[in-house]
Length: 456
Image (cartoon, rainbow, N blue to C red):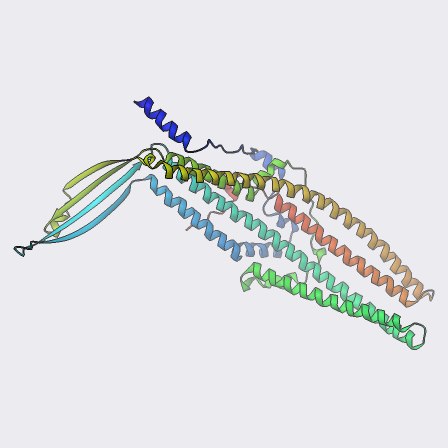
């Protein structure tokens, strides 16, 4: 009989779903992770106390992060709720009834109360699998929160760098505008003397108008960036940090040195990849639980009850009863099979999502390495151009002082220097962003210790 039953159950299990397995996980030892020297709080390497305070304020008060915290709390509450299915369920009821004999008109009252206890035996581990699925889902939400925090740090840092960039550009544009105003005075004087054509004067006036337009555009961009920083902070109490950043220059931030000599498999420990993996594990456990839902289940029930015409006597609970209930869900084979299929497809979708997240992480790392090389070389080249242009500008100035060159030549050289300095600033900002992206890409979590599990 046992053999027949085993064959019967095996048939149903095999008929209702494919055999799924979790992908092999990357396994790095704690010592190997320490050797990589990768951290979530890379921003502290800039040695700026105000910057650290600002980012801590963002992590604590940002609205998107706090919404993610609430999502995590909901996931934790659901996991705890499902855990209760592993334990007996206690319930009770209070009852009062009235009967009336329609012939004699007599009435009788009856009070009945009971305490009930029910428990489903987890014979095949179905309930445990369901609870495990919820636990993995909650852990995935915790990694989602961690990934969002890392992303917010990246965004906030880039915004601070860009504000410093706009601050520097503002100074250069004002200096450029001052040069053009001097050139306009010079050209106006020459035009009156008949030494230049009106077209030359119109060209310099056009350049002056464009410079004013660039200054206004830079100011608009700066104001938009300040608004974005205010949105990140969420609370007005943090706006004082922005006033501090308004005074900074890109020179106030040192250039960090990223180490690209890390194994690509370590990227499997990124928060976004770990989130996908835990969602996949949750789906795997859910599939396992759903497969077992076709098997017979046994529930035990017990009750302690009392019934009497008098309310006081009805609470004596003198009647003890018990029952055993065997459920046969395989009789509804079609419905159960479809639910198992749905669970299987969900797992397969999440498997593709996990594999894509892992591949995308490696692609991001490779692209970041190329960007870092390109931006570093570009910055070095622009630095050389700036040095040479400074020498050229200085030479024209000395020639002008000696009367061997016109003021116009010196001002032209100075304007060219101003333009190359703006290009250099842009390249420096892009390099800082690239380095910042490196630390976001390589923010790894070896275990769950870094995860935030808020209390509720």
